[in-house]
Image 1 (cartoon, one colour):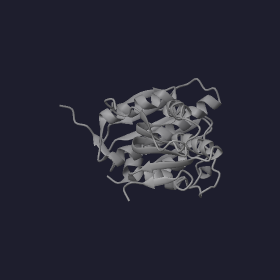
Image 2: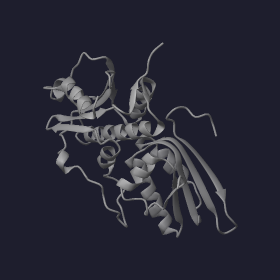
Image 3: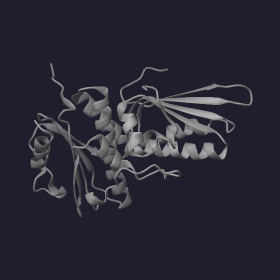
Image 4: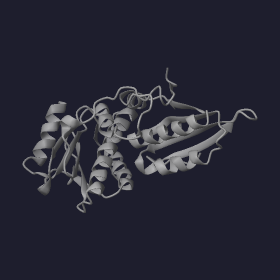
Length: 163
Length: 115
């Protein structure tokens, strides 16, 4: 399936749902994300579930996921939002990971592009640019009640078969 | 090196160099993300301020996020203040892309061992 096809399936899973009522019957699992430490648990769960095509694909996907998740956690902390961020892993073919937050949203058009070399760079503000670069098929759907980040896995990994 | 569990962050610091010209290498392996930055900064913060060169070997990292880069930028800033040099080793395509997209290849003294 093409990347677009996978993205459509991810979208369909969450269509019409603004982040207030995300739901789906597709196979998979969900993890709440309340801290930066929890991102490591999400990565472990994905590693246990998904067989990546190679170590570089795994690193690209999990670094992009980590950036999106950290961004969501920072947004919740910034606005003192108590509701949990959700990492949804859809074990469809191909699989997809979705990160859902309840922040105030981001304008995808304002996302940073690749920064030029800077002789005195600051030490923050690169997360989403890195995620977009490593996972070009990533898609953000954002509004005033939150952001849904779709991270398709097609071409990067498959659901592990259970014996 | 202790047995590595998937995704864990590992750190090992080694010293070399002559008297009066100390150098150190920090090897980092596993997932280097925001949650692990305090461990990394704790390790490099304990190094002597007289280092003429600090090499951070990231070749065995399996995640490398923007917070890790932030830690390296702060490290470089600290080394600048003591006339030390930072060298950052990488050898994987995703590491190269992270450095390239952020424009930090030169600033962090990135050397690609796969070249």
